[in-house]
Length: 66
Image (cartoon, rainbow, N blue to C red; front, side):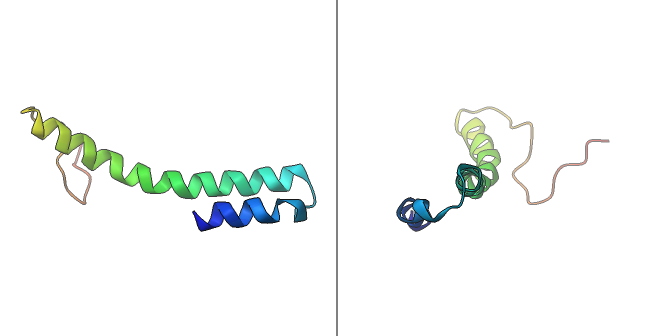
């Protein structure tokens, strides 16, 4: 992605390795947030496709567990 390329091209400007590692970590967290939002619906759709009844419904609001 563009952010990774920019980081690669400017890595020599970081004052310390710690600052550079924090930049890497930040990019990784940004990327993983997208996947964490998609994994739940993907599991439900896979279970449905396999003929299983999903434990969690595919809704925007979490199911009440009380």
